[in-house]
Image (cartoon, rainbow, N blue to C red; front, side):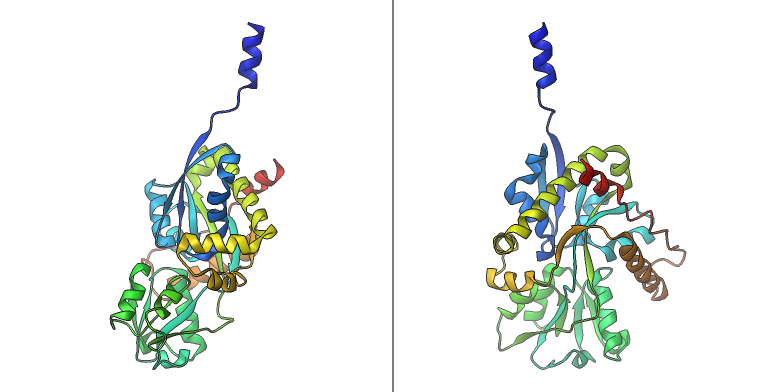
Length: 308
């Protein structure tokens, strides 16, 4: 009996299943490295990973119960919370300028989008970037024909002539140029806006499954460490994951400022700024109230992951 008791106490804890939603962009590198290096499994997790064309689809899956943790830019969380959804940010993977304009050759500068059909994805950080870009160029929303599309339709819409350009990030930019460098080109403008690549979950998961989330963040922390040790390898495997030329990935990788962290004050300030923009531009229902974003950005899970 004594041997049986020892055996029971020495038995490893049961592995926990975790459903994970991942977008298709270089900014989600820690998730891709965690998949490749099996850091989820090292934390006793059994990952079930689903890939989505955009962060908005990841957020939809999160709210619908399809995943318990996922990737999304902070703007999506702004709109979700303005609509009363209990989405929370528990860590960030980086902060960087992700977007460029890819357009027909007749559009030589960003100012030339006046009177043009420009693709974007409504309610995303690309929407916010386009707003900032127009303002910088002395243009208004009415100066363009803004066409909201699913990101998966950007390249085909541009190639087919339905739009004259679109705002998004890699791999879509390179995919568009690959349709013909004599037809399309990338126009970059710096200093408009830096996004946060965020790790999202629901408040109910924080309340009911904190141990699961702590393990997930520890797995992402190890992945982040692996990236810092060998960024070229991480860029290459991430490029393979999102079907992007590794050479392009390594160049873009330098823009991402990989750092697994959570700067609550800076993040809350940006969420508040974007919420005011959404309300002032009537992008949410009239009765929407700006929440206390200090409750939306939750640092306790990462704090615990770092302690243990």
